Image 1: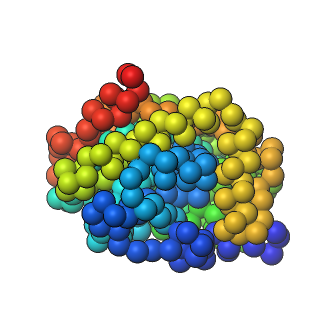
Image 2 (image 1 turned 90 degrees about the vertical axis):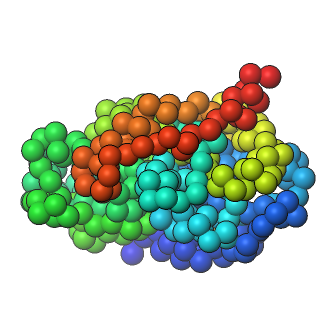
Image 3 (image 1 turned 60 degrees about the vertical axis):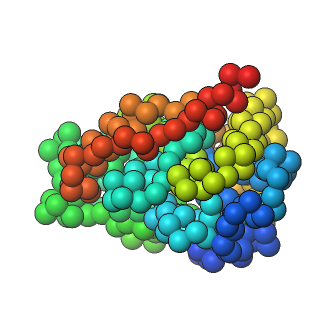
Length: 334
């Protein structure tokens, strides 16, 4: 296995188990301690910078701990069970949880874009039209990236095997594990978050099938949102405000300090895996996203409508009460 296969295995183990020293799981109720969730992905740069630079500790009047996740389903389960209080996650799992009656509210955005559709070099897939009879993987069933790709397939008259169609979908594939699957010929394509999509392109000769700004909803759909529960927000508004102030500082830092931001993310990956991503991969991946505080609620609704159209959810989606960015809006306006 190449060194990036070892990286994949390491990230899978560590993100699943939370073995980073300060990333151990633990309930963090009340205002005495706050547990913040995030993913070791490049589009989570604001959360990673906020963590690594100590912004959350500076802005929150409580002990702060962190837990990293391999996918949104695990994140939402942790939010549901009180293992974490707030954090960074893709909008798909959060929307699905909200529509199922779960207690979750989006209090801000962290990144737009960052979905790259790639295919294995010898897969025979060059465009979306080539997916018939092929296979692809995503981090989760019905996740943000999954819905984006399936809508593109639907536009070309194709469906996945979930709906009796001709395209095989493998879900709950840790993004880092996509590297090994491509190396071993286990999968033809992936809807990958960054930097993993660009890693496949730059280091494993994967084909770029669709660039990040040409996928379904492209530049407007948030790839990462900040969520908490309504209960935690109502009981701890000052804590949430502190977290959002830290988030705003982190977003500003990434805009002004791109080089150090990439080093910071890479250092975190190294702490989890003892391996660093190539600088050219991080630099190229960085161009495929926007780190931001702006939430496009209309794009979230469009994604939810698509999820319903694809039968990931049973009822016409109503996102009333799902987005409340008033605290972050006030902070940005200061």
